[in-house]
Amino acid sequence: MKLDIKICGLTTPDAIDRAVALGATHVGFIFFGKSPRHIEPADAGRLADRIRGRAKIVSVSVDADDDELDEIMALIRPDILQLHGRETPERVLTVKAVTGLPVWKALSVSRAEDLARIDAYDGIANRFLFDAKPPRDSELPGGNGVSFDWRLLAGLGADIDYMLSGGLNRDNVGEALRIARPTGIDASSGVESSPGVKDLTMMDEFFAAVRKARVAA
Image 1: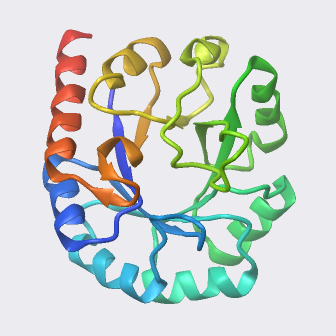
Image 2: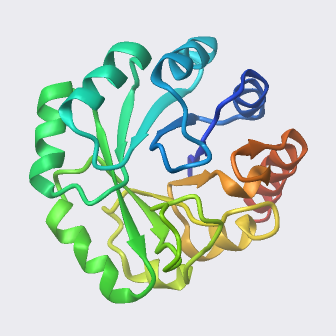
């Protein structure tokens, strides 16, 4: 089975070059001022141009308004929009219609009941991204370095296309793939030496762990 691998929160040329060289199918830029991985759209556009055509470019925003999305569209020319806030199904539909792009909807998960939210977005979002629910003291909807119980995803229908996110790193990604069997994985804090600082060696080790897990599967 094909596995998409997204490295998110990229902010430097070295990191984005290494991610794509290692086999990332998607690269993510975060536009959320409270995040240590926040990047200005103009800077993201320059990084995106380095790898355009070799990996899908994903814009990650949190309850962005129309003006913010217009700026992202103009300066980055993303392939995919990831909505990581409290966007309603109606908002997802509007963003898809206005931009003409596929839209992924991130949902926070900590217990089985959280997956009931899938129904409202099913057939609307092009893909789901399941992330761990943030700690109570965090202002970030994602990128907190925490995971959830991947066994919760065992009962999902085969028609639910999703990326798995939340605290994935070189030590646990093999287990995550074995239990959840997602069509894609998303790593950010798990390949960082400190918040927002991508570590090229950790990135190498993450991709090596993914390859090892897939050979063993």
